[in-house]
Length: 153
Image (cartoon, rainbow, N blue to C red; front, side, top):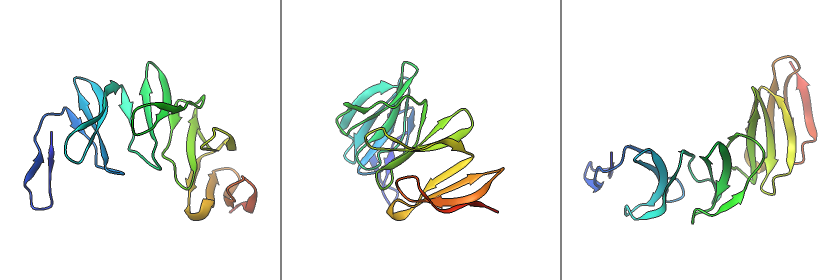
């Protein structure tokens, strides 16, 4: 797989097992079973070394290696290693994590803002967090985890 531009012309020749879309000017590419990142010219930025990789968001990407999941910066350096296996992308300084089938939210320091007590969480604009619990209902919290509209149906 490779990349084409809007006109359909090849800009990065097919050479990858799998590719992801560009986010923050970097794209995940899989080579010989491992993921790394390239820039828009096709230059390797992070050498293929991860078993899984998410797109960059707010300068960080969640990656998996050796049974661990953690965040790396644009150089591939490990920045944050929360004790959760399933990590979401950052938005407004917050990211989701999953424990079993429940979802929570933490900040860029790794501090848990909302524990994994919800079925669904979406970080919205300005740090407002939408939460859903199938038993308790829908609600919204602020970026500190305080309910501004409690879970109700």
